[in-house]
Image 1: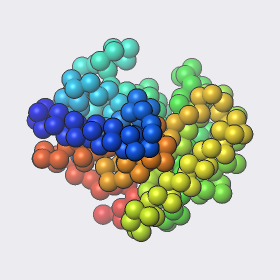
Image 2 (image 1 turned 30 degrees about the vertical axis):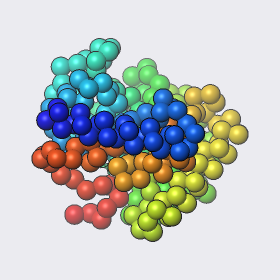
Image 3 (image 1 turned 90 degrees about the vertical axis):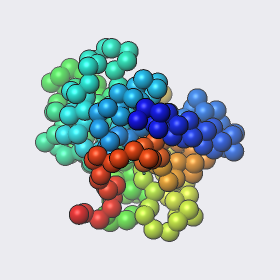
Image 4 (image 1 turned 90 degrees about the horizontal axis):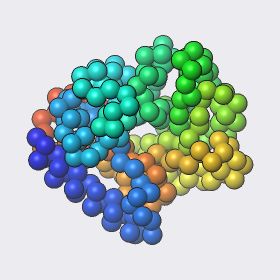
Length: 249
Ligand SMILES: *Cc1c(COP(=O)(O)O)cnc(C)c1O
């Protein structure tokens, strides 16, 4: 299994380098988050051995299951940095806080306020991204483009929440042109927020792109790409699960 993942990883890294080359960017500017929702904890262990330490999960329960199934504890340099990339319910905030290095999916003030309350109790400051829904597709999470700036302005008033940037998914329909437009809209919003000084110097992450569209993400300025299936091709899917924005089963 490790060899299959190593080969896939090499291909993904090459594609990242090529996209960076086209965009005149350095691959060092783009962080790969390996989304492991399709595979088991052994695949996470293999990724860690291959030097990939940013690991993403879309569900809190699965993140906790995998994090507690690994031998690494907080502070261990070999420990994964967990990214929660999927929708977060308020009643799961408390459980995920001690584990997640970055929450990509804050899309409401109520959720941000719950993260504030729990972070204050735990005496931590929690890094988050604001999830934007640039295409307006109803099946997706994320705040609308017009509502994003006012929401960001409210989130940055919360002392135990640190707004680090924006996350978005491309639209399901419309192909590459629609994805490019959606990503560019998010990039404009990101530039606008930076120009206004929202989040200060720590506001510098743009989480754009998955297996099918990460090159477009990189061309649009992504600092984080969230890649699952392209890393695990050829492995049995132990945890098959659709993308969150696909119709409910
Ligand atoms: C599953 C998922 C990914 C990874 O998707 P792939 O197409 O498998 O690369 C990225 N981001 C989110 C929010 C996801 O749910």
